[in-house]
Length: 295
Image (cartoon, rainbow, N blue to C red; front, side):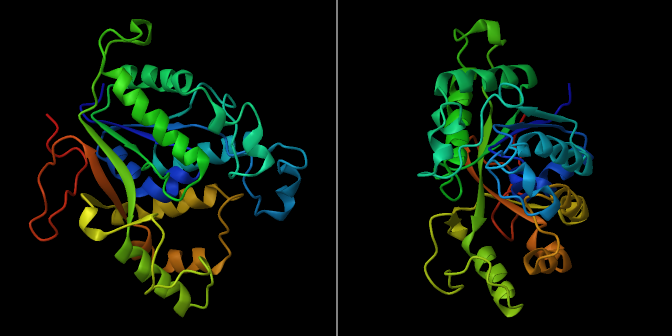
């Protein structure tokens, strides 16, 4: 077993690449064990490839199976060899947004039994024994029900996995030393939004680079770790291209990101929710290694 082990819990295929792609590639390159658990196959996603629109949930409903292949290609680009579906592929279905018919389906992830879903993750935690867990904040980043549920499942599983008397059939107890939530600093988002506006892109229409932002974006002083994945940004871009049904490689947003990849996509930020902070960069005052301080 690798000396350094990190577990990431995400809701849908592509979430991992957008939020943690360079972090994952960095730690794979450094010899760490990187395990990704994805909670749904993203069956309700919008299909951005015209020739594949027939896979949409309201047509053939074959998008989930197709996204399994996209995920495999994305993980190959990042070098990640241990990607799993919570409870097995298709066990939990993409919930769509609150108020949509998809959110009322009995097998959607939003309506999953929390203990059952957590037990699937407890088994992974006890098998892999990670020192670092990464997932969403309690708002799920931007309020998507599957992101919120992934946060709940990861949080509950983390607590249960460390209890020696709990479900010994799931493996020996393991208490993860450090837990991080993914985070987007306000300053980073405002700068990226200004660049998009200057390029004529209306992505995130309705948001003012100088105005009030929703709770998705975190004040800079709350950021505990900044991972510089600049040398791995091309791997992240390749992984984004692999998620072709969800990320348009021809749009101005991707084009701008591609041209400014080292600035827009390389740095990934986190909040330390549990555990003792490790060594901090004397200039920025934040960690530059999620494993810092782990024995």
